[in-house]
Length: 235
Figure 1 (cartoon, one colour):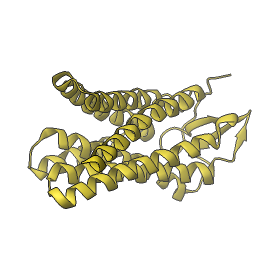
Figure 2: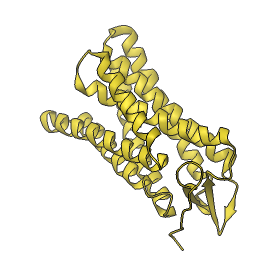
Figure 3: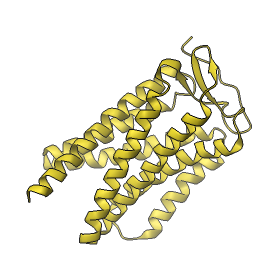
Figure 4: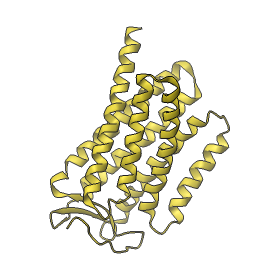
């Protein structure tokens, strides 16, 4: 059956997410690709920051660095602790894996949330670092004090992505250019993917769909980066 019942472990749900056997390996490849794309964006933004010293560009570089490390951690977790085969499904089970790997799973979500908080903070266009600290602490604290930390972290991620997407939607509505549309489209797909992943502990199809949506999002981001590099080279 597509839906599997989850039981409680010592932290949150026993199932972190469920991977169809045919998709295992492909998901790790995609996660590494996502990590590399976001790392390229981080490096590109950092190179611009070194020249311009523009604070928002530096924060953009930091946000994508957090997101890159998040995806690479996720790929590592899947590679190491996903070999358990149950009814043609590979199930990441919090109750049966070493605590160090549970910490790695939470590190993945923590880094992803920090990346999104940093990105959201850049849209405020304010220079009060206390706002950034408050956003980061509240976002992480909500996850830490929740009963089901994994699902809560996905909900927090979806909320932050929705806010970021709305910001870039307004930017596209004002500018009406291809670059703004690409950015809005990529974050819109990431928002849909983040919402989809909320249900990945119960429905294995959502795990696959979430990766497909993220692939579409990061394809747009990579396309936008290549376009920028070409434009910069021409100049």
